[in-house]
Image (cartoon, rainbow, N blue to C red):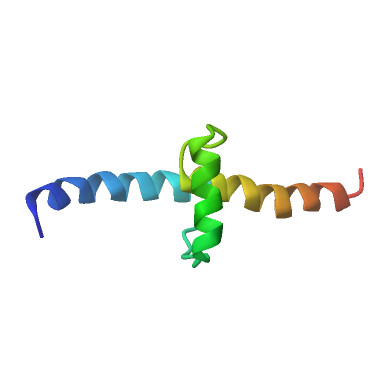
Length: 73
């Protein structure tokens, strides 16, 4: 393992830990290259800062908002 990877490992572990504490779970998603290209275009247009942010926004819009709409008030 390179020295830079060794230095970044504790940083990434801390980031993962904070995200888990915030209720996030880590998962791997394979997307078609056309989808990735669309995500990258949205980033280039300034709609998102990263692929992670773009995917979180889309997932949230598709599922979390839907759940809120279905809950009785």
